[in-house]
Image 1 (cartoon, one colour):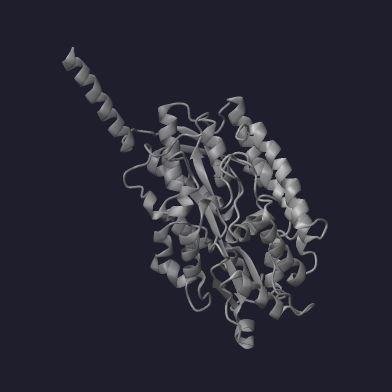
Image 2 (cartoon, rainbow, N blue to C red; image 1 turned 120 degrees about the vertical axis):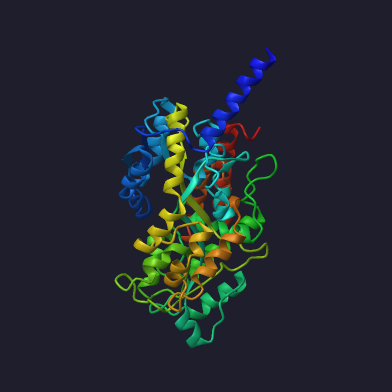
Length: 433
């Protein structure tokens, strides 16, 4: 009996090892991928025939517009239909999707040669929940300061290192209508103004909740941070900045009317494009200025995860994991960077590749690469709470911030309103008793 039991256990161990090492023949397996169109994902789609040729796995894509993707995925997951084996995974939804059992942990499905440590640590942490890894990054970004180096040099101005210095420089360069001191996102939304506001909120030492999940972002620190952010834009920003999206911020910079912006590092490929920008070669890049509590650049990533609802069989899980590893591989991310000029990889090896350095770390873009890497190093993955309730209460915060920038409400009044709504949300979710 003991011998038989030992034999069974040994076979199971060998089978597990075989699966983990990727020796299962997956040829002929069909997988379905829910995704949205980005230069990075379009590149993956256009090269999928190479993956099929290597593995025999057939990949079928279902593309949705950005604003519909989450809705379509959630409908599929909640209904239990399981139409998709692989889903595009926004980092702010990882805790929700993983917490509800909708995602397959990837830790035991990755090949030994797939080097997760090659990714910027803070980016990969965005896809962890309760110690397990549920996604791999396709598109990543970090915020930093972009400024007119020609104007700074001409005026003898140093790059601001602190919030106080940032405000002084914005005031010094404010010369409307020819030039405005700074532009950042004003438009409401958890992924709009809250994304850049949170860097200042954290920089002042702000916390969203106490230990019992009572919202406290409307305390003295939160009010001070929001007043600072709103004052910067109201006093030194372009007209209409309270409704600025990231695209508006970019346009204000490339048109030459704004001296500084704080936004995503991947702006570089557009603001340095002669077909889209009047300030090519005149831009400097630096870390976001520090507040009393330090530097807190905004960090975001969209990745790919394996659906526990769609990938029901072990074969489907393995095929899906195989695809996710290929789509996020060094080769794919380096080739997309060099061929398309996209700079959204979070792989250290891509940033250290000689061809990448030659293209994106030269005299034309001084400081971009070093600023990006250092920003990833100091980033705080939880600079906005990665909890299931974030999307709902984050949008309340976005409304409040926009109202402060536009002068409709005081910071205290607006944040109190958002905190009241957040308390209701946290009680309904069961976190707040």
